[in-house]
Length: 426
Image (cartoon, rainbow, N blue to C red; front, side):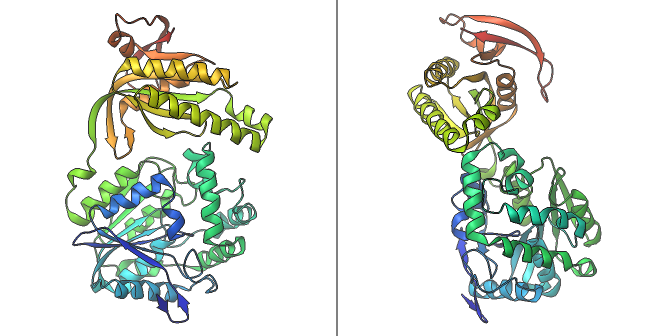
């Protein structure tokens, strides 16, 4: 789409009476964004209850790369042009980080075109000292394995090499290091505090309390100064909404914009056996091997893990960077998978630890959550090198099998009530 002298790329997908327009944070690329499975689930989740419109700002991603950093007037004009192009008279707007600033300005300027406003991890202004200390270091490592994006914005993914490779590709396909610094210079000068009390539409402000990039105090300021705004403080330290507990974000968005939560977005609870594994001393091993050799070892680990889970009729939920999470419909299959994997990886020179627990889990799309998952993760974390630990629940459910168990005593598991007996499996 041509807007003045610049091309602006946009995309429309999903169905629904409501049109939701998402404004990205500091960088974006429409095409590369779909390549990350977790972000893809977040975007398709929005499209399950709304017609979803997304676009790249001019100067970034698939939009005109030579358009430079747009002013606030440019941003508001581009958003208006996108709405006209998709035939939307009135929309719900959602802005992430700096995208929230454009969404707020548009809502105040064109109140008749905005039914709802959502601001996530956003701000009306920001202390220059925060960015002056961070952005030069960020730009220096932009698009490389040393990038600060993962550690600062999605810390939970810091050990995931596949996610790092995707982030590096997104960075390189979104803007240059110079473009990133130019964006910061615009953010540094921007101040929307005088505009906030002019926003008339229902407004939802969401912010994770441990956000390392934009502290939660900035979200609280928005909620306090936008008339009638509702504040939702979420647990976690992930800055963008599409990772971490994104299901909660989706649920809050749907309830806020439509007044209800669809059956499709609600979690389904089932009994499942959960297996967690990870490579012993992975950080030291990676440092000793070097990047190339470590990536080859991880590829070998992932292939053995995938094939073993499939052979044991389990479901590989996801990789965890240096390990994996899988579920099984019977505890014996989970134990068999862990033992087979431990042996096969040991033959390949890879020592793992593993933990198994059977309990109730929540099915959330392709992912799983809930107390059963937390317990399995805590059990695995307590296992020694080459050890398979199980909860007492697993032992009781496989009574009469050929498995032998040796008690490792009672343990307090972080975030889990009561004490749990853990047992080594042989």
